[in-house]
Length: 157
Image (tube, rainbow, N blue to C red; front, side, top):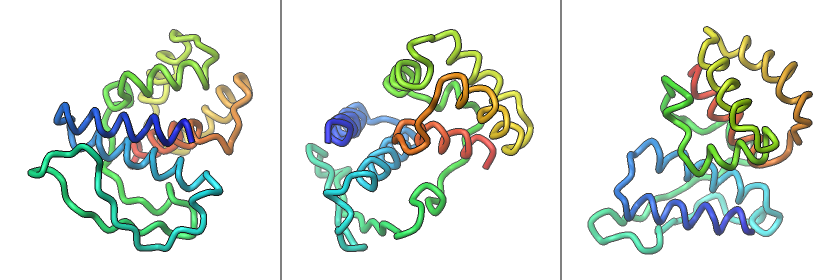
């Protein structure tokens, strides 16, 4: 639940700062992924109305969210990313660095640069699997790993 609370706070701060639409989407996707991982939220109905707390009246709106029963990240239609480095926010950068790269910021930067250099998703996916996942012992079921994978997938969308 800590991850969910942190993402809700992040989304609230982004709204207050009138963040870019793509940043809001990225945080919302991470929030949905975190919620789908939690047993507490597995029995929610498919139709959920979401009202973002603390939003001003002019940007607050009720949105119907359909949470599919299949893999959430596979079904979400997201905007493509041109550059991973610019798409990853500062909070996510710190989280990815700390969690996925054992605090090694240079390794994170090199990984992002390498992934950006690939032409197709399959190449990037193979490189990540053979280098990063094994070297840093990533837990495939962790929300942060899924969030990173989703960003990489969007990079080649």
